[in-house]
Image (cartoon, rainbow, N blue to C red):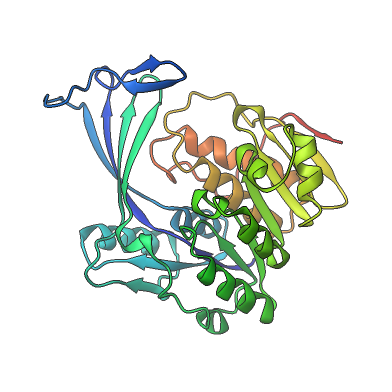
Length: 320
């Protein structure tokens, strides 16, 4: 088993769930929750308190898979922060490197979820997870992880560079799943790819980095920067290469989507959890898809995360 440090955010997710008042109403190419009027009072069917955030979600995948999982990120000493620590303790995640910020609340998302369609809108106050510059890359000297799994740091390229350089200096490999703030600066992001061993992006994100309109084109250009690249495309599956093998894959299962929150985190961390357990490139892609499917079939960003002990069924995947 591997020792994997997850660098990213941890949030409390508060779900407001309803079956009729949050029905999406189309407006051109977009949609709104049509029955929620300004100044009105809306009766919600259910409230559910969960936890999420890319750093925490990925750490849960690694821990359930039997790896040594360490979370690196910021929360506060408030009820939401204590709920996150409780989940880390329950899942067996090392919280020794959590930083508690003063004068900041733990990041919180309020998720408006239509229980019929699974459509959602997320209102986020990032709080302690808004910043990462206080995190110390020298902690990696103490952790000595085999892998550093990095999700968005809200465009903090200085912190990303510090951690990437330190990881490489001590022989730690890196998997990176950048976010919107990083992708807003493609030139800066591309410069960091020389440190990265595995890059996981979706189709729209890949098109921010390299030219191309279809998956094959995007992967071809992305492979000039990185050996192992994965590009996902929602219900269309995705494409991936490790330099020696390239696979085009579909989705693991056609399930009713209860909540898509955390699907991308589950895919990326599921791939790393499997590949570091000695699984083949092909099998790791299948497990990543299964992990993502497990998450979208349940409420919350991590309730459906798999353990790696499940028997997986066949799915559309072809070597190209």
